[in-house]
Image (cartoon, rainbow, N blue to C red; front, side):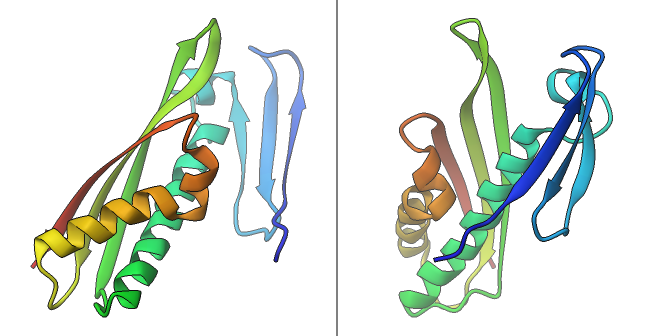
Length: 143
């Protein structure tokens, strides 16, 4: 098995401070702040990175699951919308809504939906989140 790493730093207090995050591979790094997390300020935030991880994991896992069922996808596009709400007086990730479109020759919609729903529950990032975060899926078969 592999171990993945990322790092972050924060300087200053919560509202006026600033931070920087970097993924271990060096493929992404960026600034974050109170406003980029809880308002519309520039920069990224941890929740946006979790949404990206869920979308990327799901797209890859759905492709693998479709292929294992004998259907080679031409394309899988996934978008994850993460809700950060207040729960118990603390900011809490409450839901990630996946919207997926896929072009998969030779598959009917019922079979596609069954595989897509199974993948919603079994991709590695989803397995880490399920039980604490509501994870919904809207999957569309294109073509």
